[in-house]
Amino acid sequence: MRRRELLALLGATGWVGQCRATEAAPVWSEALRREARDLLERAGEHGLAPGDYREGPVEAAFALFLRHLHGGRGRPADLGFRVRGGALDGGPVEAALRSAVAAGRLRDAVEALAPPLAQYTQLRAALAQYRSLAARAPFAPLPVVKKARAGDAYAGAPALRERLVAFGDLEADAPVSATHLDDSLAAALRRFQTRHGLEADGVLGRATLAALAVAPASRVRQIELAMERLRWLPRRTGRLFVAINIPMFRLWAWDGASPEASPALAMGVIVGRAMRTQTPVFADEMTHLVFRPYWNVPRSILRNEVLPAIERDAGYLARHDMEIVAGGGDDARPLAPTPDTLAALHAGALRVRQRPGPKNSLGLVKFIFPNDDNVYLHGTPAMSLFARSRRDFSHGCVRVENPPALAQWLLRDQPAWTAERIEAAMQGTQTLQVNLRSAVPVILYYLTAALSPDDGLLHFADDLYGHDAKLERALAARRSR
View 1 (tube, rainbow, N blue to C red):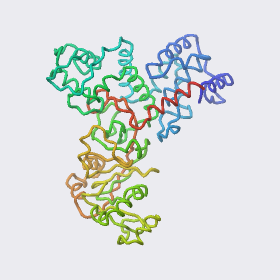
View 2: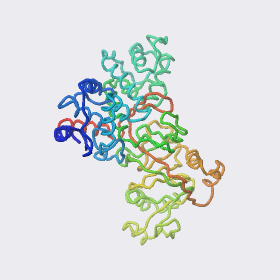
View 3: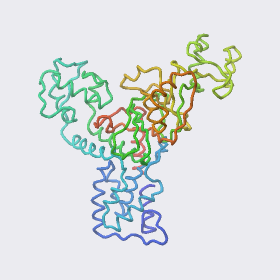
View 4: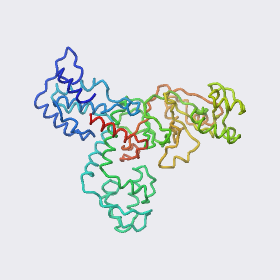
C-alpha cells in the first residue's frame, strides 16, 4: 500500500489500518511522537530510507515504516518471487503498534516486527560497517596487473593492504611487505576471494581486482536489498528447513532449532543458467524422494537439444541410456527410434526418458517438492562442476553436491533408512519412492549479500540473474509515485 493511501486512511479513520468498530483509535502522546521521529530518522539501520517517512502526520509515517519493516516495500510477486513473508494485510503491524502505543514504548513494535532471523541482525551490523567505509576517503588506487602471485613484486602492496584491513580480511597489525605480494597478503586475499565467490587461489588477477574495486557504497546497496528480501521470507516455525541461496550456490539444512542455531547440513549446489534457464525463487514443501529415478526429458530440452542430437547421430539414445516411450508412468513401453517414432516425438505424441543409473542426469536420487515449475533437487554424474566457483549450469533444477547426506538427513526420523540402506538403494536396480513422514519446508531464495552459516563471514555474490537490478528499479519507481 502506498504512503498517500495510508495518509488518506489515517485522515478518514484516525488510525492506520483497519480498526475494529468496537475499539477506539489509539491516543498518541507528544512523547510518543518524539520517539517515533527518532526511530524514523534511524530507519536507515534497517536498510530503509528515512526520507520516505518525513511527510504527513508522524503517526502515519511510523505505521508505514513498520509495515515496510515487517513485510517489505514491494510485492515479491511483481518481481517473479513466489514467497510470502511479513504480512500483506497489515494485521500484525496494527496489533504490534496498538500494543506499543498502549505501553508507551514504540521501540517494542520495531523489535516485534523486524524479521526474527539471525541473518537479518547480522546484516544490520554489516550495513553499519560498510556505511562507515563508504563515508571515509576513497581508497588509494590499485595498480592493474595481469597476475600477481605470492612472492611477486607488486607496487600496490600498501594500497592492497589498506583495503584488506578495511574489509576485515587482514589484521590491522599484520606485518606485510611494502613492495611484494607476500604470504600474509596472499592469505588475506584468499579470504577475500572466498567471501566474494571467487577462486580462492591468493592470486591477484582481473576478477579479484574487479571485486576489490567495487565501491563500499555499492556493497551498502547490496546489503540493503538483501535485508529487503529477508522481509519477504516465510517466518521460521521450528520445523526442519532447507534453504538454498541461488547466487551463492549453497544449500543449508536446519534441524528446526532456534533461528540462531548452526545448520545441521551444508553443501554446494548447481543452479539454472543465468541466460536461459534460471532457477525460480519460491517456497514449497518437500514430500518425498526417489532413488534411482528416471529422467523424463522436458519438452524444451527434447526439442532444442535431444532431437537435433538424435537426428545427427543414430547412436545418441543408446549411448546416453535414453529411450523413446509412450505413456506417462515409469512402466511406459519403450519404442524403437524409427522414422515414425521420431515424427511422433516431434509432434509431442511420445517422450524420451533416461534410464536409472550412473549416467542419469539426475544422479541416483531426486528430492521432490511439487511445484508449478517442476523444479526439484537431485544428484548429478558431473561432480567435477562443483569445483568451480560459479555454478549456473542446470536447466533450472538444483543439483546437490552430497545427495546421500541430504537423503540421510531427510530420513532421520525413519531409523530403518540407515546410511548403508540409502547407499544400497542408490546402487540397486529398482526405482524406489520414499515418502517423508512430515513435509519439509524448502526455500529457494536470492541474496547477493549474506553472512554465511559456514564461516560466519559476510559474503557477496554477483547479481547472477539481475534480480538486484530489478528490485532497485522497482523501489525507485515506487518512490517516484
